[in-house]
Structures are given as structure tokens and as C-alpha cells.
Image (cartoon, rainbow, N blue to C red; front, side, top):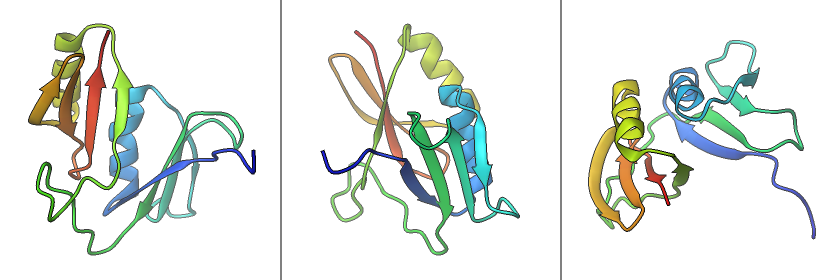
Length: 122
């Protein structure tokens, strides 16, 4: 092993707003932010404690457009849930939107900025 994953970093136009969405979706606390909170926000635990998700300002971000290959998803998170219908209702209430695509044990959504993520269940 060369190193350990510190954080997954997501580009977005408003780090504080998108961090708020994921804090509610995943139940992760705010642990770090830039002095003004407008450039960098981190959820999770201290470095070395997983999971950590960071959000950084990206001016002029061209959001993915699932499933358009001209604007690919770039990355996505898989979120395990106990009951898909309740989880979907809660995610949509936070500002997620349903995207085309689902399979055996997952459904595809977009966060408020347009990044795809999946709600997964057994």
C-alpha cells in the first residue's frame, strides 16, 4: 500500500449548500471548512477516519447529464439504504431528483448540482 484515501472531493458551485445536502443524506457531520465556507467544506471524521467527503468550489462547472456520454457522470456514490421507498422519499425531499436507470438493488438519482448517486439495497 502506498497511501490511504483521505477524502473524496466533489467539485460544485456552492460547497456549503451541497455539503448540507450530503450531510442530511449520509448523516455525516461538518468537520472542516475554509475561513468563509465558500471554497471548501468537509464532512466526516478527522483525516484518517472514513468516510470523508469534501466539496470544493468550481466556478463554471459543467454538470454531468446522465446518461449522456457527452457529459459523463465523472464519479458517483453508492449509498446503502434499508428501505428504498422511504430513502427515495427522503432524498427527493432534500433536493435530489430521480434519473433514468435502475437495476437489481439500485436506483439512480442526481444531487442538487447534478452529480449522479445511487441508492442501493439488498
